Image (cartoon, rainbow, N blue to C red; front, top):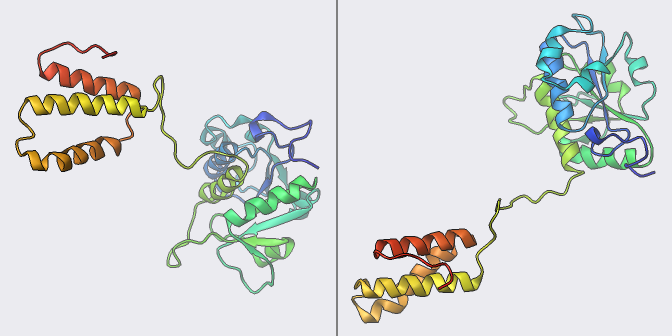
Length: 260
């Protein structure tokens, strides 16, 4: 079964059943709200709470969700972990300590394609997070199919609840999008062509020659190469080349015509 099916929602990136987030005994409404905000950032909308300390609904959670209403409004509350997990096929338990259990251990980056594969088969998955103060207990790890550990500074692995949710959610979302690691925002212009650059070089070198810049003739070839390297490294746009040529003319007291 494909990720993208008829019941998919646009806020989930076209996936009908993205991972469920289960928070065990969350203590502060602020943290629940921030976690909900992190979830929607990453296309996660199914939040389940097990025995929230301050009850539900929670005004502080709504305020800290900063508009992630689809998550807050559809949050479900359970008294028992077993009920919160009942409809899931696979559960991944987050922990900074793998304890003594013999289980597969994923990083968030490794977990993302695993979950997409499982969901692609039509199964439902969830990620469990423990209380802010103590994290999950041994019985929670026993409920999971695998554990998730974030590789951080061994001397300080403490994360707040929303940070932990965001790390899982971010990798989940990134595994499903095709965004280049680097791109140049061009707005209304476009990269300069080689012809644009050659015209700039000829123009600049002509004016530098007229000003006496190339005083030592035998050094001229190397100086011209250096000048060209400087501008070629800059990845100029067409508009930037035109601006530079206008600056050259202005310094000579003339008026630049873009077509010359």
